[in-house]
Image (tube, rainbow, N blue to C red; front, side):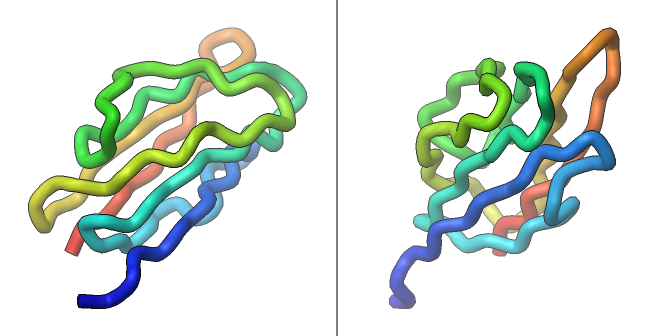
Length: 93
């Protein structure tokens, strides 16, 4: 079994980087807020703990979330400023 990999998704005003991230069960994901304001991140259903929505302050990286879930695509989104929303996808394989 391959060693789990850690990934970081950058939250930018132009969208997440990467927009789509391919992962495997057991990998870990963090999200880093590169915006000048706090964001409300709605987590994908494939991570645990299942916190639902979290706030990430400007310039801060979230805690590590473990990837679980079956092989499929899981959407997440983040909201900042006045109603500006960006979306991304986690592909579990």
